[in-house]
Length: 235
Ligand code: GLP
Image (cartoon, rainbow, N blue to C red):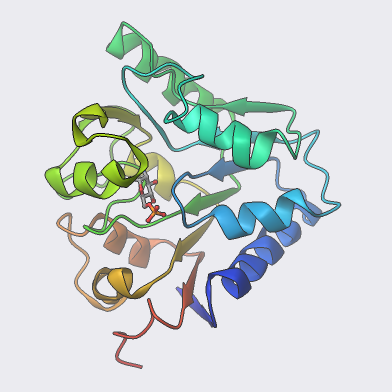
């Protein structure tokens, strides 16, 4: 793993942008994208740049189940607002939160990923170490699946909703097996609250209890931290 420690999320966002720019210039065709507050500074840099993604594809990690794409809490809405409305991609794939047949939707999304191998996958980090919506205990080699969100994730994500009861309890998520097949992975994590889980991800044992620890087994991972999230690393 290559670890980059930036001063703050804004500077870190610049570093993230540079990795996207390099990948684009080196011919990456498929970009795996993430939601959450963390990627926002990178998306902002990309949105304000001259980078041209109009002949490239994007594949998102996850989507809440049971909310429509135009619901302002859906990940489709988030992506439209923060990136796609400003930077055009040839096509952008997300799981369909309104799918009625889980097995069909899972099959469809796995096929999307198989047909469009991800060159650069961007990840955030959940407070419990989740990546995408792969919660602790998720198998390291699975594909797309329906996730029952943990209490920790529901609480963490409730800050975006008026009422905790409005937070969806399930989501579709790309599996860890699919994430690990990406050619290159960029994980971003900022803030003091993430310092403990960042240290476990990088320096702790590789265990399903800390999903992001699997990244220690990937040959090309860049982790971008800010000073606060790096503060519990031993070196
Ligand atoms: C959600 C998303 C994850 C994201 C995580 C962290 O649960 N499914 O993909 O990494 O939140 O969010 P934040 O970046 O806001 O801390």
